[in-house]
Length: 327
Ligand code: NAD
Ligand code: UDP
Image 1: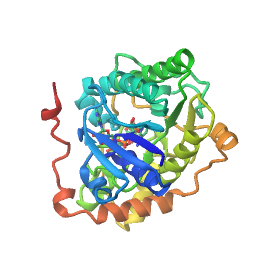
Image 2: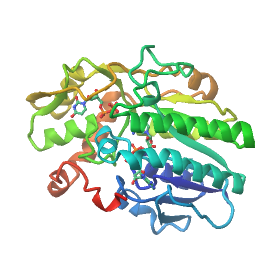
Image 3: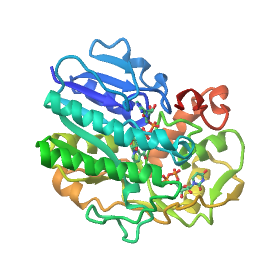
Image 4: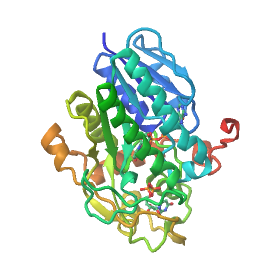
């Protein structure tokens, strides 16, 4: 039986990856320190005979007995608000954490896929973003802790590939959404949906003319799976190229909820990218992959999830208390 280690397993994407690899008939070892994740995302797997969970911080030495075929490194805060609150942990998980996992992959002779991000392109001057674009990142700006850690992660992974001949894969994930996002993680889709359900005004940052391109989780998981199984070691963009401004997005969400919404404008966060859209030609050609779930369908599925939350969960104080993880 193939054995796979998934870090960030209790988070949004990691938990969906666990489901997918279990469905593929593999033995899944989930690892997470729960800093931004939640065990409820994987509790349905605890009784599964092919699943085990290790509560562990991957910036510390990672020990896994027996063999491993695949490692997927998805541990890292991913919401701008999270990584601004825990900047040092964010830097450490994609640098020290990635180093530990690459070392583990080497010992186990496992193939490793690391989760990179469209943030490696920063506030892009090339549009849409192709994999050969070097990016426009402010290393010392507030987002630098995430962007530079992810860029370092890519460099380290390439070095293990070229120097040690390790089998590596790098996915550059563009904004992905769906059930199991934390309602108060600050990212725009959970933020707007939570605000609508609590009858609060929607917080639009800046003038709302900045763009994003949102990919539904099922499409993202399919792209990641195909990349892992491919023989391509250079970075590949996985995302949905349907681009929309935040202002247009407010209208779509209001229509979905069937409600008039009030808007409050807040300052645009420093270095918030003004436009973002993946060029996915490489993924189409290499993986025969394209997103299948349109925004209206994906948003409905996501809104249904947020509607199913208890009012206690919906009203949880805006951000997680990270204090017990700070060291
Ligand atoms: P998430 O916050 O839901 O999940 C991240 C998980 O990693 C959490 O469960 C958290 O507890 C865990 N974690 C963080 N630091 C850890 C550590 N030191 N040791 C062990 N576990 C740790 O975020 P997500 O949206 O699921 O993102 C998962 C990965 O995908 C991240 O690497 C992120 O950078 C990448 N990504 C996501 C998106 C997106 O749109 N969702 C876009 C680009 C990249
Ligand atoms: N945004 C917003 N209101 C919010 C949260 C986010 O207008 O309450 C904007 C944010 O400024 C950015 C876009 O929505 O331009 C996407 O933000 P998110 O945090 O989801 O992800 P990012 O792509 O910036 O990492």
